[in-house]
Image 1 (cartoon, rainbow, N blue to C red):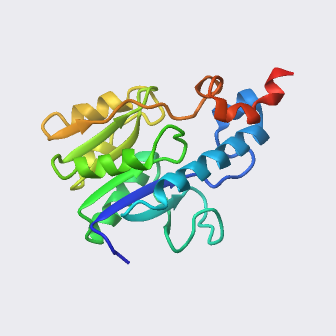
Image 2: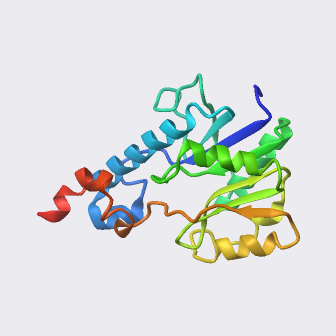
Length: 206
C-alpha cells in the first residue's frame, strides 16, 4: 500500500552459502563471503529503515517472510525478468503503476552509502528527471527517476564496466545529475584495507 510519493527499491540476493558474492568468494571462501554479505545487508537495513519513503525489497530467488527485512517497514517482492536490466525495469514499472512519483533503486552491497546520501538523492529528483550514482567499477550503485525510461535497461552488458557509460549515453537528452562515485563490494581488493571487514578476513592472514 502506497503511503508516500517516494519509493526506494532494494535489490538483494537471498543470503545463501555459495550463492552470493561469488567473485569475492573465489578469493576468501564461501563462508566468509556469506558473512560479509550478511554484514552488508545489516548495513543496508540500518541506512534505509528510518528513511521517510516507502521501501520494497526485491529478492533474487524467493521471498523470505521472516528475515532481516522487517515486514512493518519493507514491502517484499520477487525479481522478475531474464536479466538484471529487465528485472530492474519491471520493478520501476510496478512502482510507477502504483502511483509513485520518484523512484530510486539501490543494491545491498554498499558499505559507504548512508541514509543522508539517499535523502540527498530523493531531494535531487525534485529538480532533475534522473539521478545516477556512478560506481568505481564502471557500473552504477544508484539510479533514480521520475518517469520510466526503458532504454536505460536495454542493450547493456550487465556486470561489465561499460554499463555506466552506456546508461549516460541514453540520458544525453534528459535532465540528469551525478552523485559522488562510490565503490560497491565485489572483489577482495574492495575490502582488503577497510577496518570494518577485517574480522571476516582473519583467515586470509594465516
